[in-house]
Length: 70
Image (spheres, rainbow, N blue to C red):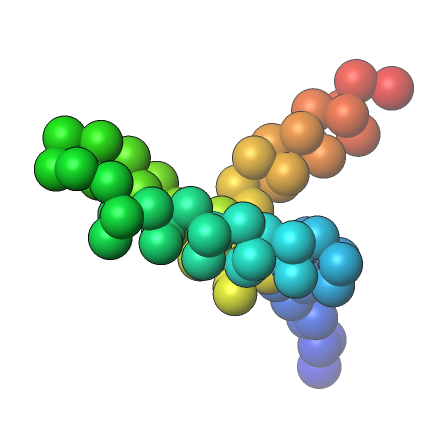
């Protein structure tokens, strides 16, 4: 019987912490900016979610192409 270990996270702990902090700061602009600019604060969800989950699709693509290139 073969056991398969799934490696889900591709972001280290320091980068996760930085992404969560940046995501929270960026998301907080949603509450302090006027309406049209406030919608830009929703982009703070991207670093926040990738920091919480610990997986970033951009990192996965870069690692894939970096490993296949050599």
